[in-house]
Length: 288
Ligand SMILES: [Zn+2]
Image (cartoon, rainbow, N blue to C red):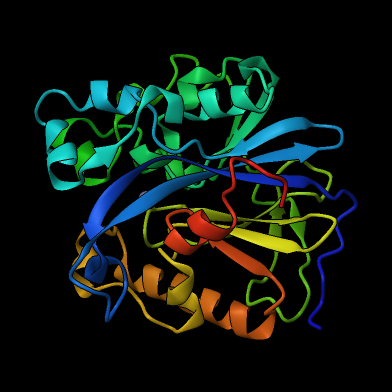
């Protein structure tokens, strides 16, 4: 057995998928097939004993379709076909398990790609937690420049900055020695949710370490696109590098996850777009 995280607070974790996009498998996984596969936009609901309900990203929302009706944003939809109905949005799926929008007290944003932030406007009471760099690198981009970073500024609530709580780079927490990260950043200040840097796919992208009663998890966003990728050390096709701000950082983050899985196999690494996670762990929000 590898080391378990020992946070002061354990949380409950529920996974959902809010919409999906389609791509040929070979783009996302070296050696993958030619067939077009459905790639889920997974988000997580975290129940914290004191802080209440928090989300990790939001997936797609119907608002994404409104934002991509006209050019240049329409190019997004033309290159990445998206499936999202009103019943698939985070806010609707949470309502189905009895969680009202105002009950969501915080949303931890892995990075600012549209398929991770399309639902932000549906949660009026939520504070937004993210790494400063993730926002700074995209916030002034508009039109094609924004689109090249998969950022649609219209998805951010008008009071986004007032509700932002940037993750403090000084709030460091030590991790077990087997973890290939020097430290985690304490998102809430109680050691329960630890952000780790996974840049490359997007500037300032973070992953989130947390611990439930049963096991430890790393929500790793888009640092890998599937569990097979880190398990079998299969990075995506070099073409996928076209959309990355830094291939070098992507490779470093990818290799960290491969190493983490080898050194701490009990830790479950959950990529946001993994078809296997969709099949096995996203069960209408059942507790993991
Ligand atoms: Zn992304």
